[in-house]
Length: 178
Image (cartoon, rainbow, N blue to C red; front, side, top):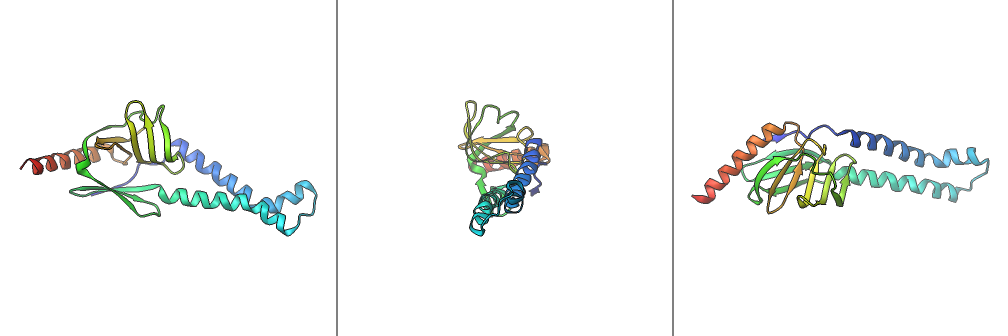
């Protein structure tokens, strides 16, 4: 069964607008810099002025490729569909419980990934959960899947996802016990 992601939270929306404005400003620097400084800028320097904007554009493109765009629950797996870089698969057998995520990101530290540009994805750490992974778009309205690893996700319909996920976990445990 497929699930949509929750809408981007406020921090994500603000960061996208700010980073797009900054990138456009950086990319247009070769055009406005000579007007501001009243200097004639040689071609090589114009290319050097363009370089930070190009680097920023590449970084934003790569970061957006890892952002989650949906979830799929099969009988044995949770698949996180990402915008560009394929899907990431988690075996349901590695999880034992599902709970509301609450304020899991409060006092969390990013170990790698994104903490507010097109989502929260990658590795994080806090005192309550230890190391956990996130594949979410809203830091306050998600679910934490725990077991041998912990994963924070934010499906649009959290209660429906939670109910179906619990049923699949119970089915797995019955199948293992049989």
